[in-house]
Image (cartoon, rainbow over all chains, first blue to last red; front, side, top):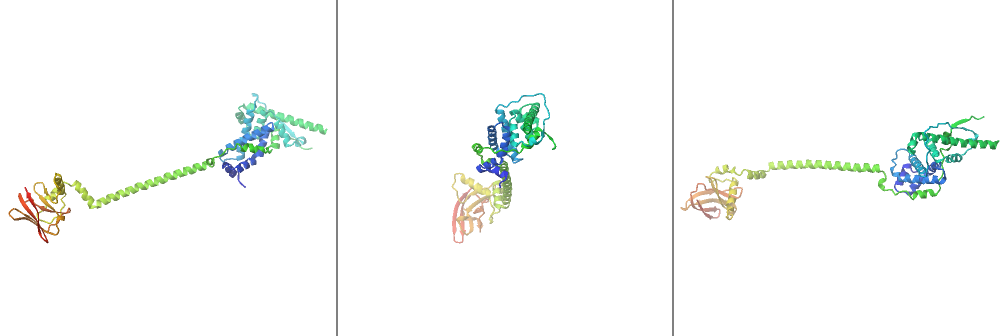
Length: 184
Length: 222
């Protein structure tokens, strides 16, 4: 069994089998990320394709310092950001910082929700809110880093994140209520 | 009743979906593969290549420096050897003497006694001989050299005769004025006879060998 380094070096030797293998190793995980960032399936595929092309174009620059998966993931996320920016995502600048606590009670209703159901709730968010929610909650970016990356203010990032959580919370409550109504 | 757990919405979604994976469509790789660049070999292990090139370059420099050092040392050794050789070689010294002590031989020439078997090198004479010959005269075996003031020598080429017992200068009165017995040629292959005390006149120069007596020349000295 080849190590990750051996596969990468083989890719750089124009070994097509190694290149396909490298793609297959990370395809499902990275497509899951793309699916989370995109609103529709075809958008997820576009982001995935652009992202992996960049991975292979920059493969020779990888210095084998740090995680290769992390390196690929950063490229995919940047591809997602570039894609959303390109297709008209815009932010409503908010100077007032909104920090409302948004909690959910995990109960029987919420436990019945599948991963795909939850993913659908995320995909239903508006582009700007979905992007910031992904960057802050899933990828661990700070609001300052998000603000720099998206060229927005920190308060806008915080507000958008809070609003995203609010929307998700409302969606979950609706689902719970519907579930209770059925029972009753 | 089960315990109700309140969780931040963000944390709730991450907790339940962070490991979400989804297989992309099969055609995805075909689209990506068509745009994978062709890598040049030099892109592989660039840093290793850089170290390799640097190492080779450094090795070449070190080897060149070592060779240069030995070359310089060798030249110095050869030069010192040559100098030593020159010091030890009498010929080289003689050559140097020929060039430099041109005028010093005057003192040795003046001290040469008559009718002795001497083999003192008289370079000055030979030089004067050559000069005199150059004055539109054919080169001969024997030339009278002019010594400053007192000493005059007459030279006969030793190659002309074998086993010379005597060289005799006979004047017009048939008197043997100079008799040189068992002459020895000098280093240049010439018999030198001191004729300083000969008075002006014409002389027969006889060569007596084991076999016969030969009239070498009749010379007139002024």
